[in-house]
Length: 341
Image (cartoon, rainbow, N blue to C red; front, side, top):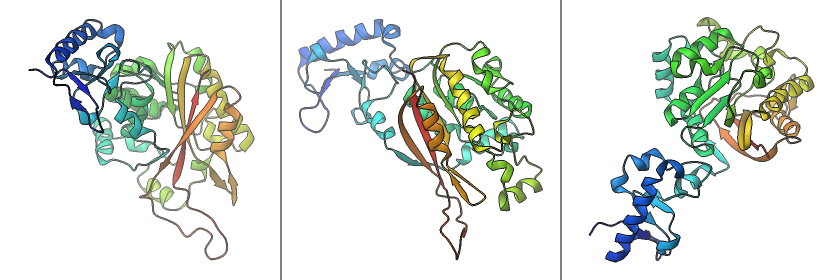
């Protein structure tokens, strides 16, 4: 007998042994398959449909609306309107913090796609971005990055079968971004992020971005600057007067940065989430709660849902303040999560 129905009588998911129940489950699954587009069933299930089984924890066929392939990987419910994840996959992402460092494969791929990819002074990993995209979108959804850089978000969209849109002010970085993936060439604009609502983008389902951390790169010292100067790599984003990273006044920076996301609000679909990766900074011995102030500024328009803390634990510690005063090594970033309501 082919097993097509699972339940969870105790702590473990188990197959239902009743022959008639499995026959009925097969009929329900056939109906699901016929309506797969309307139901937005993820492609990984469609591509392995012969292995898909129906699931209900109490074994109720009439109420069963979840499917699975391997019980240990969890079940996907057709009621899931946010993403294509199973319950187990969903839970893993909901931890409020995560440790992530640069992945060699990502760096190698970037250099293979374009030998100049290292020129950008503050890139982030497509692998890390893929996790966020996978949680907040479904296949085929539109994802926007107003600070596209060399195209990490576009690469993450390619990997997850989403459609990338974005802007990048720096012509050099924009050129790298569109060379990395010609599929999104017309979707990535070489222009000012503060004009995000004027570029004719379609309705956006999700946005993830990392704006400049104020003018922190303009103040780079020590090994970072020495190493990059030696390699003739950029130590700041640009000299452009529209570059947010060149704003010296803190309050002006907060308002200008927030303006990008205020303009973005107009092109987001209702209920869409945005993630902003930012961190608190120090300047001239003073602590500036950049992440918190940006969140506060935007919470007058968006619903501030949460934060997810990204920790980099492979960065060497410096003896800041020693031996006179407390000064921390800031090795974490805030992934601010907001929602259009």
